Length: 415
Ligand SMILES: *Cc1c(COP(=O)(O)O)cnc(C)c1O
Image (cartoon, rainbow, N blue to C red; front, top):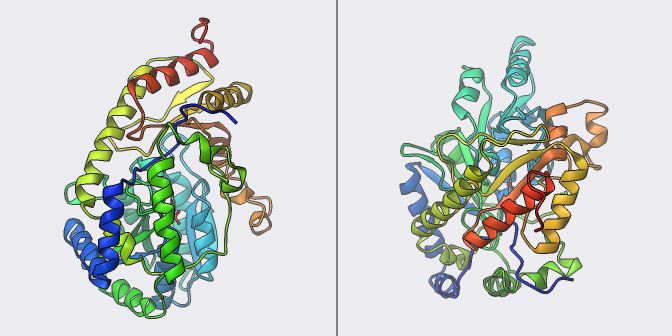
């Protein structure tokens, strides 16, 4: 175990002041949650907002609601490279996972393949099974939701915007989360805004909104013990997320920090009033943190632009997105592995992304028997992501840059 400054790969600070607001929310009761939802509705200019215990809980509920509207369809089409919680939520909703390869350049759908998948379903006739398509703003890089809408045309296929990693992004009038028929955010530990855990659904569609409202009747609040655990966890995070102390939780194996697990067994609760309170002043905090992340990402991007190395490529960043992490691809396996382990020794928070494409998750592999999604597979093997959160300093960025230059042998100086 290394005992020194360690950057968390992703970190959304929860301060002591936030926790006091959380306690205030607990005291105010359900009004605190209604208030948070009303603020979200106003900010996103949507009719419906619902708040849950996690992004995957939100996705599960919204998919069940879509299936209630369109019961004869049961397949959900997602990118073959995405968060493992997405297929987990689809299965939990009792639906089937279908995959579309990604565009290795920008991590959005491979639109050529998407078109074939949507059109085939269209051509094959009346009651094909495609219920929904899930465009995803991976790492905060904007997905082209409009283009998915164009492909859908007037078919009855819902567009579910996975904005789990992209809250606060987008433009005025076209904010992420409000671009599809229905969208969701995650308020998890490393996301743009964090209430320890949490998820939000937004929709402007009355049929979807009313269907979700019916689902809500069966969803319970956190238990008292559950709420106490949240408070404790918020306190722990507020202390140990800091780079001067993060080496402690990092060194405790059973916390499984940084591991990607496929978990089908998760609970679905309404966001607690403590969490709604934690989100106080969320618009201001979201903006401030996004600005810091944008600045860090831009500085890293400038450092690496113009490097020509066949083993290395950048993800083009158009439109100044507030990324959650800064991505690059390293195609040389040995160099990539050595970069990640050297970064771990130095506590620089550089990690890979999801370890495998979705069809290679052990529990799912049989369902996709032998199908291949080459860009998703390659991306899982090549992607490296760097921290850009508010704890990242100029000194950290310098060290990250030097380590990468050294690993890729752009410089031969000592580190
Ligand atoms: C985090 C995440 C989710 C799930 O959110 P949780 O709050 O962790 O359940 C879904 N999709 C993407 C792309 C994510 O990054």
